[in-house]
Length: 241
Image 1 (cartoon, helix red, strand yellow):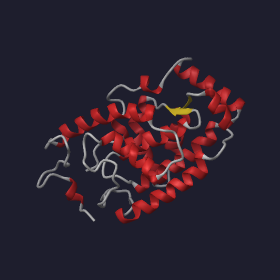
Image 2 (tube, rainbow, N blue to C red; image 1 turned 60 degrees about the vertical axis):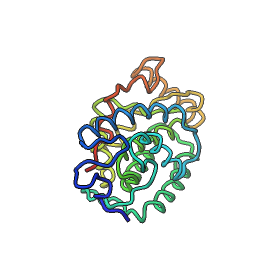
Image 3 (cartoon, rainbow, N blue to C red; image 1 turned 135 degrees about the vertical axis):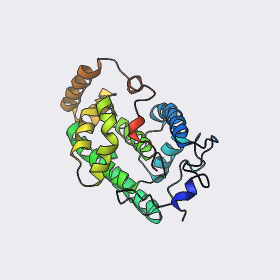
Image 4 (cartoon, rainbow, N blue to C red; image 1 turned 120 degrees about the vertical axis):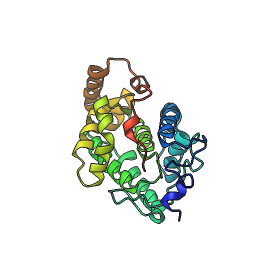
């Protein structure tokens, strides 16, 4: 097992990185810019499939491959944060169990409405966040993971700026047994991107209602990528020191 300090430059308060940066503030800015550029690729090109540990790893690897030599590898050190994240030795088994349950409870399930879907997503997001599989970049990899999963149902997650700013706190509260804020954000954020696929998974009436809700919020023609400026996902993650 690695120690918390093994992820930092020796004697410095800056995480080791592929960019040769030794100032954490500068590193945060660089990682944000590079990972958000990669986010668009993950959301548009990741194959829609039943999820697995490798699926989650691939989301993280694609996002952070420019920044860290451990991109796509599970955390090997304790986190030492206020939330009791999983012990590193438990992460592989817990992620496998999580993926098996997520496939059964979300990917393979037909829902009665997007609100029903939001209930499951908030529960699963809290569970994945509690595991905290990676040393850094959990928020952005979780966002990519759940967005790709939603696209399997004909939906995308589109968070308003105020919700993006609160997402990290909402995830942590849900992991601590208080899911209300996260559940509400997900319910507001679920928007139809494929009406035919949505109708297959929630039924025609519920899908039509969600299409109307999406059109009212964003107009009849929209894409998720159009709603994110380069800095709007900053508070989805942030440095985990």
